[in-house]
Image 1 (cartoon, protein in one colour):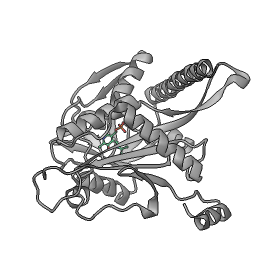
Image 2: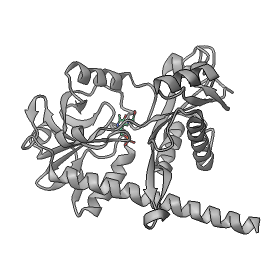
Image 3: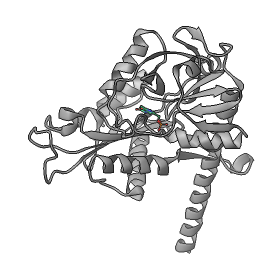
Image 4: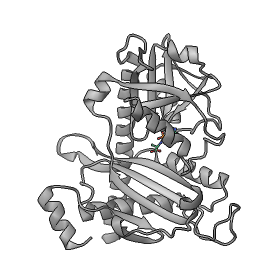
Length: 336
Ligand code: PDD
């Protein structure tokens, strides 16, 4: 980053320019360049991930508490990345340890550059495209995937939005039938997000032939008579990392969960309606197409799951801190 941009950032109290990783190098965001023949640009031929990396306090008590960076459910995110890459025949450029190290490095670089406060949660975006080649639909031989990692402050719903809940609308799901692949070709999802904006609401919940699939960038859950339901894992939805997590949280809360097809009538008569994603965690929906969901207020199942979600974060923070203590102890032994 140039000294000029540092000065500007300091004087306006704006964050400094992010540093991104592109094909083996750390570069200021404004200087990162991809050739126009990159298949990500030409065809949307790429895979991505969004990983929330929290800053959380962990430790026993009082002055022993420490702030740690917690790449939440990262093993699951990296497993999904590997699965998606495999499904479209792009070689995974790194193994899990490689990705973890790279993500930590890009976060550190952004902290050092002043683009990410040391106490700010991070939104880590990872993208791998098939690479650069003369335009032609089928896979070109012998090209190297383009690897991009970007870190931004994680913007999450605020307390007021959580307390009030959000509004959603419905629309027909017109996307392809490989929605389980986290592909960068997201035009169908982009149109659904725009549809929400044009209706002045938070999200569009999609139905395919009368059955709920998912929202533009979230999974969808309903509660009826105390039971939590979500559409089953299939190629019609992206299996969110929060899908498995919320299944676990439901168990924590003593809540029955069933993966079951949800028709339009069940959606519209739900007691509670929830959406989940890396950036929203879990969020209550209180109106759908202008009509109240249940009693029109956020419900007890949402509250229980949200609390359980925060406990899951705290558990991971403790694990990260324990691993850090082990590393420090080993280092002390080595240095003796
Ligand atoms: N989107 N379904 C779709 C279509 C999504 O785009 C997402 C997340 C999810 C939830 O997945 P997860 O729990 O792993 O975040 C479901 C990310 C956040 C995005 O595209 O920015």
